Amino acid sequence: MGKLLFSILILCFSSVAMSLPEQLEGVFAYAHHTGIVGYEDEKSCAADQGDWDQDMELCFFNVEDSVQVKKTQVPEVFQLNVDTVGSNGHSCSFEGEATVQSNDLLMSSVKTEVWQENAQTGEWESVSATCEVTVKYADINTTAVSTNGNCQEFCGMRAILDIEEAKRKAP
Image (cartoon, rainbow, N blue to C red):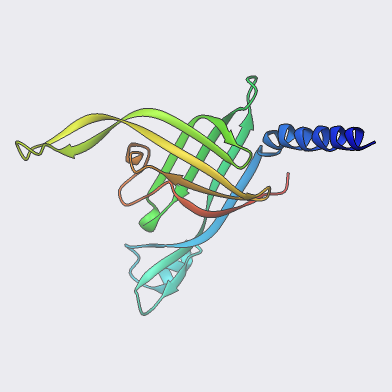
């Protein structure tokens, strides 16, 4: 009886662990405000459906960062799309294949170029690097996106791919 119960428990836990990567698929969003410069007053801001902040003299808009994780034909490999909007409307857009690292972690690595100062000459130069984008699941409905700092090629000025907390959207 003890062996049978142990075998059933092992089977149950292994099927949960094996099915969890399937549950990683989905669309997640983080809604926030971002300020846009260039509006002269509340009237011009309101004309574009923005919210004027008199103290800051900025027009704020509701925007949404998104994370899309979609199954591919290869087991434990997903198509990953991350789109973010930062200050002044600067944005990032990343697409790549992500692999399951654990039940709550996906990672995508792509070759890229970064600018780096040459320590000997003081000149700036383009060097090969690897952009790593990690999607960490706090639970099945909540993700966070982080990078290793080599992903600026996918972003406009002052924009970042990182998302602190994105919630699953209803299908």
